[in-house]
Image (cartoon, rainbow, N blue to C red; front, top):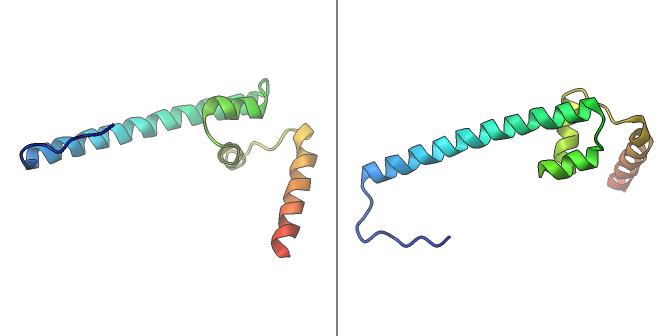
Length: 97
């Protein structure tokens, strides 16, 4: 989106209106993110959907969804726990070298 500068300098009212719009948009984004987080965590707790499917549908990264899940007390499914432990171990030994 290319916006062209106005012919006249902006007024304080123009700036205030833009600031109000930005804050309103930020508030809507926060609410929609909170709503999405609630849905994602509910799906992970329920366990009927694969975590990778939930992550992909959410549009968030796997790391972000995993962190949210751990912060909410949702541990990896037993099927993934061994892989997660191996990965964690390899990352800690790789960082030490």
